[in-house]
Image (cartoon, rainbow, N blue to C red):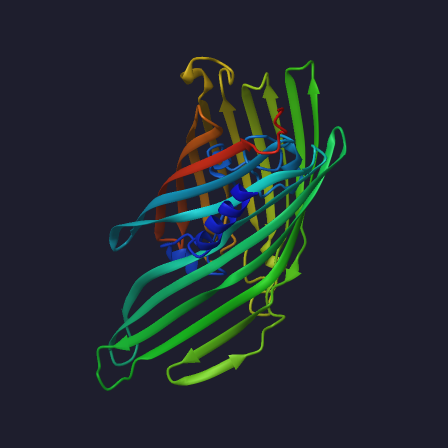
Length: 402
């Protein structure tokens, strides 16, 4: 219990810094740049999750997988990332670095391998951009400049339970408290000093609840072949929040408490593991943003589709040779964005290495991701991300013999 208290004390201040910083111009649309809520080790496999069931990694995006943990273990994951983004448009190229603490999650069994609990904090969306669009008016030939700036983002605290209802079926549910704020600024200024500048500020603040359910079917054949089929579902729900807009010196408050909705989401996936060494997996995910209200209207955002594939190899987890116990990962994904502007597309590849530690059942994971995003017709984003994740798995509930 002392270890649990220490972990909670560590987690509380970490929550204040869990929001990942963004610098993408496309984060000015919607709720910002959406975050893939998978552990770094699964992102190294392209971002698979629905069919992943393991006793070494906490998988908060698939609540049915929590009972895959060891019945005597306490687990927690913590990750930090550094991101370099290279933007290219008609005006040239710009490099922007970002980085922060990404997530903090914990997991432990409540009753043998039948019931397990998980909780943690993860980012939901990130907003951070700053750019200018100069031009000339059609009448009077006045030069003007429109400055766009945004900041903020949404975070989510979750708690989830998983149940093994049969020896080969598990179900689970997550409950999320989503909170945070997004602020967008638009400032128009003119070369003519007689024309007063104008600024528009749009402010969104949310404190709302969401839920997700999951199911997994799993079976082992001939002691060496393990197959998992998984699915997740999240219903469309109202997002409680406030919306304010100011223009120059006037304040306009609009009641949109029922004007925002989270989308219906669903995903399916599978994984196949041979002899506890080689794992291959694939996922398909869909988020129906076009039917969710945004500023009290639908069809303001695009449906998000995503396909991910990945593999993991560990030559021998019980070998005396350290290199044979190391974990190698590779993956890729392709999909669309929920941003409606010019139909942004993205694809990415990833690599990862897992270094097991000798003293405890802990794995130090390193993940490298490359994403290419094409948005707003003339803007291309190349994102390189490096993540360090510590996945601790300790035998806390074993009764010592005297």
